[in-house]
Image (tube, rainbow, N blue to C red; front, top):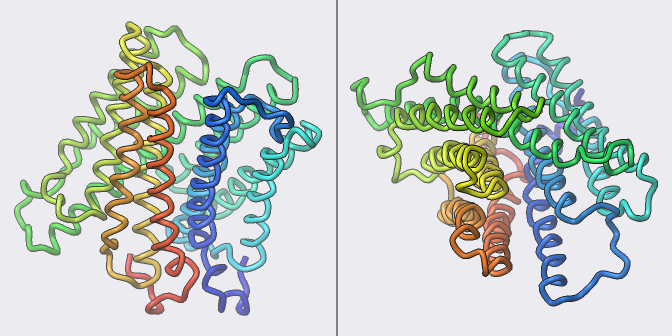
Length: 406
């Protein structure tokens, strides 16, 4: 799925390059549009001819998950699967085609008020099945069970997106919120699985390079705890897939929060506070038990906002981990040292601050809704502006050496 001429174009040589850049740009554009819509309503204005045919809050959730996050997942999968299986990279014209499908999906959703709903659904839903097909073809070469789970998660995301469009096309009355919740918990499970692999591994490797030799000073992974952490979030996903009573879902969230917090505590985060490329991973993972605990509090006693807990997972865990991955992988794959620029450390903190505000400040200051939302959204936008500025030459330019170092 690549050709020699197009391999001469660095930007089209591997999936993370265009899709990480698209993700960064879209994180800015979609959040800016959401804040602009809120600003109109904060000023008691009205948009006479909106271009979207669906409620704005559903559009916002959909585009954060199936626009921004789906682009990051695509870049990751197109890069990781060939490494896992030895499959040929998607590059050149096939990569351009996949980019075009993703972009077309964004356009039809943005202008859904001007287009037939079924057409919007067909175009927007084309991207993830194509990605799943590419992933399946790669995994068939070496069908390791630990990697096949990613194909299953992609299928759940396809179903969730279908449920959203089912409501938007009038085929169902109330399935969009279900689809958004399922998609977010699925993406959280993806972070739990990947985070459990890369966070302790990257931390261990870095500490060993520093000369840390004693096993007790290195990150530890306990097999039963790892399984419990993944199983806990998987159980929570089942609770959302087949809506179970709030107490059952709340208990699942509480158990998953405890398991993931215990798991994180073994990864020696204090040893990497001087390395942003590492502490960003630990910080992103920390939002998982925090968000899960928030869900438990919301579902078991109404002590916290369910919506706020979901945003802790979305902004902190998913947003933070995707930012950490998008700033690390390009360095290794382009032959650069695994050290992020100082502004990128600031970008990590901006995303974390956005999560803190969106997740907790509204609970503390409910009368200041717009101030909190605009502040959190502005921090998110600022973080991704930094990412795009710093990584544009890295993602579009040639590697510093022929072989990747990560």
